[in-house]
Image (cartoon, rainbow, N blue to C red; front, top):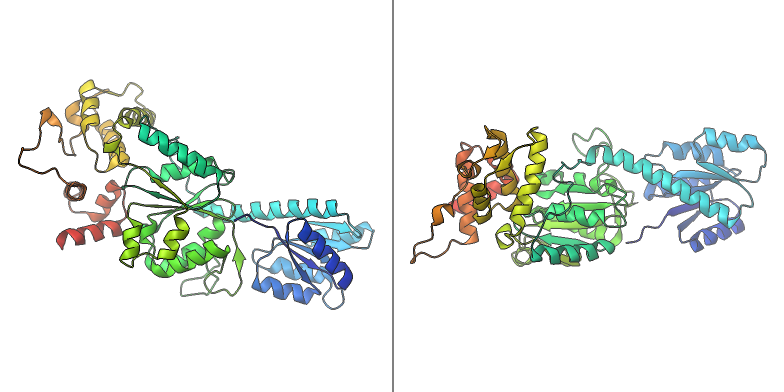
Amino acid sequence: MSRKIRVMVVDDDDVLRKLVSEQVARMGFDSTPAASGEEALAALAKSDYDVVLLDIRMPGLSGLDTLREIRKVEDAPEVIMLTADTSLGTGLEAMRLGAYDYLTKPATLDEIEAVVRKADEKRRLVRQNASLRDAVRQPSADEQSALIFRSKALEGLVALAETAARADSTVIITGESGTGKDVLARFIHARSARSDSPMISVNCAALPETLFESEFFGHERGAFTGATATKRGLIEAADGSTLLLDEVGEMPLQTQVKLLQFLEEGRFRRVGSTRDRESDVRVIAATNRNLADEVNTGRFRADLFYRLNVISLHVPPLRQRREDIPALVEHFLTVFRERFNRPALDLTDEARQRLSAYDWPGNVRELRNCLERAAALATSDRIEADQVLQSVSTQSEEGKTPAPDSAPATLEQLERQHILRVLEDSGGNRERAAAILGISARTLYRKLREYEA
């Protein structure tokens, strides 16, 4: 969706209002006419506008009085005054009251277009600064990195991601937990036309179901018990940028309906509001679930799945791209050398071999956690093989192989064993186990219920 600047033209002169509105529309802006200050304020109560071109001399509510009322509107548009008065005093009074600028009639088309674009840019930056203050989490040093890989599998995936970055379509990234789906999403955003704005990320599994709508779309003061102040949602925070919906399969069905409506129309309403707002957002969704299966079981809407699944990227598990393990090990070692101020920290050759031979059911996240634990607990600068995998299964130790009559463990069995082992190591503390596993407590509870069934 290409964002259009929304402009309201307010003038009591029918001919001039129609002419300016048509000229504004030809500039590529979304133009709305209003014949009076009262009509302009009524329109602002229902919809969102970026810029208002406002005549100063009007019967009833004057231009300056209308400007005063507009400045009281929450998330007010920028106002450009139009005046036939060539004296400096009128323009200065308008600027004192909060107008962005003023133009003397008759203004040229170039003048109008230039000042509208500058006013819109100012409003967009102000909105982003206000919205992103609480919404943006700065990535850690290892998260900021480019994709670390050596395998052909990742080479092909990165080439597809480069192509996807140049488009502005929705993207869905699939893969097991811990494979680096969020890193791939940041890679796409960083190479897109939206890279000047920070990417907004939300883990859908971490949000209580009752707060989804408010978190996504915002709410007005008094919209529900506890709503003591107006709140911008993630959709507004990501205006002009990218919104990553991590673990999108955890999103409640009711929120799925409203997200689909936003993706189709680019419009939304805060909870408790009757006013339509617009936001230009590119959505990237990530999930470790098979959403097609979720659709078949009724846990995910088919129409939303098709709307998200414009570009599909799959991140293979680490055991299927073992060539990447040495590069990832070096990368994480560099991170932890700096973090723990131990520049000489290194692994023995045997330790590296053991890391490369292990299947890593928790994927890159498990590898990172393993190396961090080893680096934090190391008593010397050489990390030995028996230290590096102390808390995970040493399935490749001493060349052990499964008994001839035993079937290989399935992925589901390996995941179950790993989760239960981490839970045991955490002393039964589910919140701590979920943090180590890199999943939400809600996801952990659901998996444990499945194991008990």
